[in-house]
Length: 314
Image 1: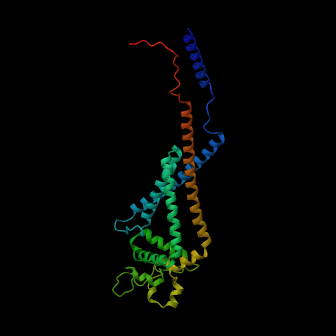
Image 2: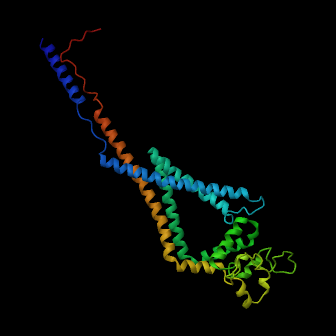
Image 3: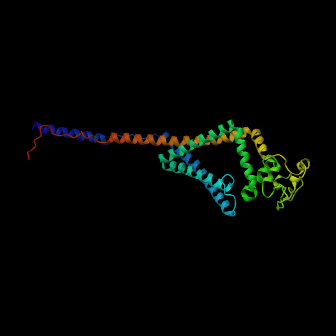
């Protein structure tokens, strides 16, 4: 009789404990202020990545269109083909921003970590390139001179390259790499008696000093320039090379160039920081959910058995 009474008492106590546990208020995973901060990080990163994702897709489309519009026998070197450069830069930016865009929208920590790691690697590479360019200025200038000389040699082989060189020469008021005679390295402008080209001993029209009252572009203004005396050449074309002109322009506008480079690095740092902030927030929520689940899980030892129960031997 005492055993039965004790068993019923224990059963009532266990039912009361279960009833109290069922009406216990749930633990809140995060406060409204935390949610507002998380949504700000998430959608700010998503919008940033989405804008650059669209811009990178436009770069790829422009590069592909420029590549398809060319002839088949044009220059196909990465350093000398602007279309290939557009496709390469656009594809890299498209892949990186896609990781950030999709990772931010879907709370995918793996994609966000990959996105932030790639940005950190690019940031380190850019800093290393800037320091190397500052420390080894002569080597960088020599490398740039060789690259520009290759562009002069391939001037007529690629329409995009030709337009790029013409733009630089008109923009900076220069001609050739070191001076206007560098154009003798090009097969069309080579100054020799056995050159059958009509442009032999000449320079491109973008080297010419345009008169103030000129209304029609004279594409033959540079014909025969290399045969003339230097005193007369200065009246017709820009005598200075583009390498020195560009170097002097960078020195004069060092503050603007530094601000642009710093802005680019700051943008990458902000996007990387936002990605890591979202990753940390997601990990914090996962830990809170795991702690709440372990708190709500029933214990295996909470099994009430009546004391001195009679078990029938089988």
